[in-house]
Length: 114
Length: 109
Image (tube, rainbow over all chains, first blue to last red; front, side, top):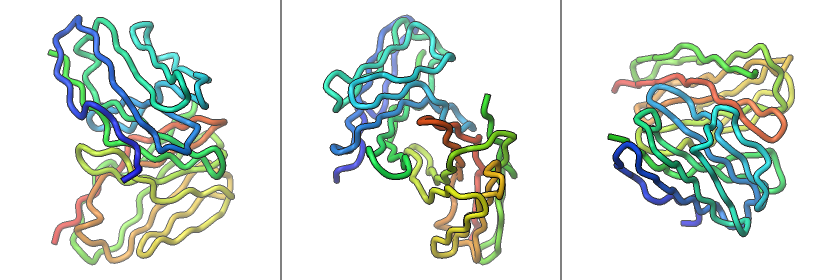
């Protein structure tokens, strides 16, 4: 299976700890998106990469959040000093360089901050 | 700020019934996508509509993009239990997307 993968699938952490999530996109896709989804809501845009360049970051994203895509392949999303309000599903999606920006989502990482 | 609304929020129907769900905005989008999401999984793309007035069919699912590219509908014919899930619409502006809150569909056997 060459779909989008995310690791870990689940993460439980205590408030104040740092966490890092990884996303491996479909190999030929140059666009990569991070979203956050809370219960009963649709995915909320966090940030977008084209190759290794981070082209857009949501204004809703606090300074505690940072994302990287160093070689234009996999990406990491780090949350520093986690808060209970950070509990959510974090979704990664990739999109090919041509076509209609179709997004292919990974299974997500569910974060629980206690 | 681009916002998408979806209606109804919840829908529970019997197997074999037809249904339509709606996605509305005051903003114009370059294209609009529909996804289905199951619990604990990421959304799965169903269709992309690009042109105002466009209609696309995917087996028992019919998708329509409004003439002004501000709204869309999804019609399911003869719903089956396998259609159960969260249906999300997403509008593209530039290279980014905004998602609606979804319609949670339950098809009872």
